[in-house]
Length: 376
Image (cartoon, rainbow, N blue to C red; front, top):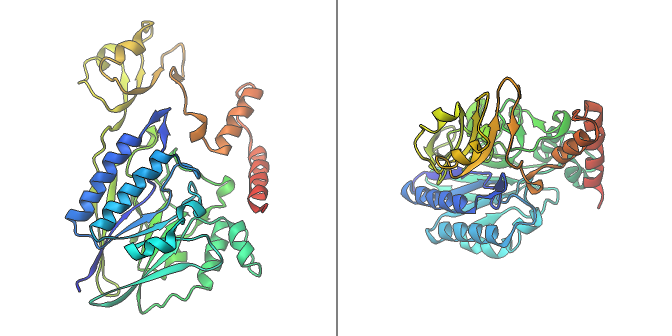
């Protein structure tokens, strides 16, 4: 048997909307593209590092889309490894997990104190695939009460201390956490005060760490500690991202090659700005656009005029000497796509003359949320 080849992806967020626009068609197109890449690259397995869905209770269309994607991969003879992310319900993700193992699809089950693993073999021996779903400190503390656990790093270190990782074997870890030093965007959820930070050195025992949670594809420190990134741009802060999947060739111990294959969306996400007349000279595009005009006296129908060139314009803003700031004319992101922290901040601003909540307010909110998580 030759060396094994893995395709690493993450953060599908199936069912996500962007500014109240459904992205299911875009997600279906990119998943078909990824399946074709897995086939053409002759990948032996696909690693999906969490946030399969946008919500813990995904809609039927999103579940059907993921079912079709995984079924296609399994039908091509690819093994599939799936962990749950912070947007997923671990119980829903793991439903029928014992049954589908026979098809070569491995899904993390609800955490009960130990990390799950699957062992594969190639010409150089065994490769152990370790699967660590997104976990909060309170979840780990419940199963490891003797450990002192306050932060996310404490939680992960506690799990790894009681995990029998054999340094002589090649070990691959699927993980959905925030690693210190990575580059973030607006579409990711973060804990207040940086409690979710985990140092990269915590994962030194693993030959390759397939990360999820951060939407920009990137390595963190070493080539083999890597975020796959989301397959699509899920916020305008990601407009300059180059989306891709990672192809990982695992040779003998200490020899791993990593490269990326670009993804091409059905609709790109772009920022365009300038005078109205200049924007009207840009070629027609069905990309998802945030258009900002700088005219001092914009015509009342400026937004409608721009839709001739950009029929899928999601946002429209005016910035000039009178406004001095961005005025978003279209609807903001819907409530279902906002985090609890964002909703609290919006409510606070409404009640306090548009003043943002302070650090003390956010610490109280974080404390309340953590207490709710610990409530059975």
